[in-house]
Image (cartoon, rainbow, N blue to C red; front, side):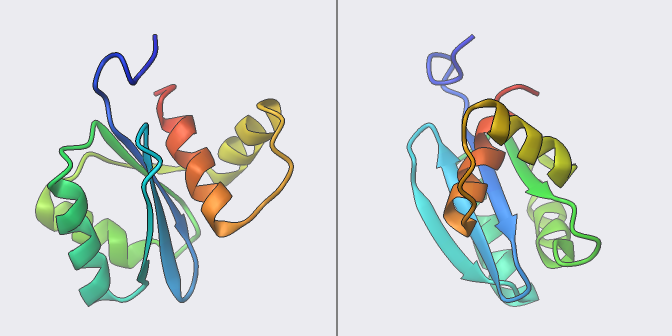
Length: 114
């Protein structure tokens, strides 16, 4: 079923050492925040205002920690997902390019299948 018709909002987050990249689906809104505890909390509060159905972030071993903690503080419906599964999903849709922005899009799109 089409998530847009259900008014579902899925947010994908690509995690890097210095930056968090966000993609909101279905609107396509894209934004970034520095990957610090303070900025992750600001990003989580911004997302809470969107009332998302699901927020997905890839498990990196530790780089996602700032946002995971912030999401818990504001009560976001967070899913920490396997990056390999997201990448395999992206390839299945024909996406071979890989950038932070595209990765955030792929993670959000992957979330519609949960």
